[in-house]
Image (cartoon, rainbow, N blue to C red; front, side, top):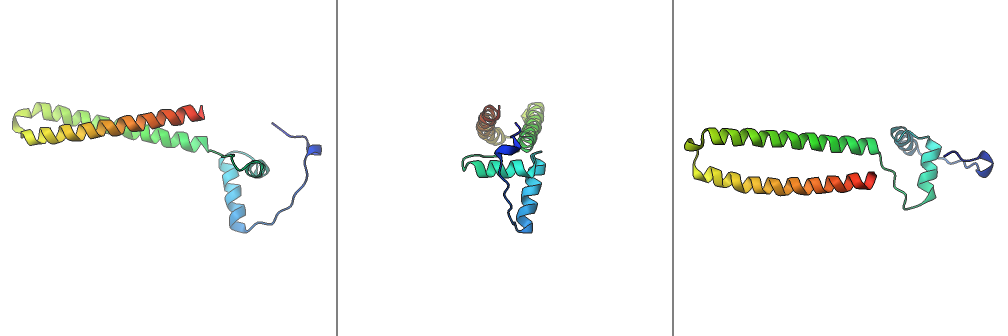
Length: 121
């Protein structure tokens, strides 16, 4: 939403080069002008700017990694079933313990991802 120029006042500020560079890079990554970014940052202490593309890319990487883990677990289970006569019972016991921990972590991660998705939707 564009603001009318007559309602705005001009402010000139001196910044250290590293601060200016950081603000400029942040505005470019968020695809907004430097003025828009500064207005948002000054408008309220509670305003938070979230780079949704970066967040969505991170979530996508997490989901891909989880898919790879699940695939590896399926391969291990198939291997264990194929050679079940040659594997000691302690290995099966350890596998069961580790699988239950994995499922807990996976369910926790899925719950967090759903909460993040609902918050940004």
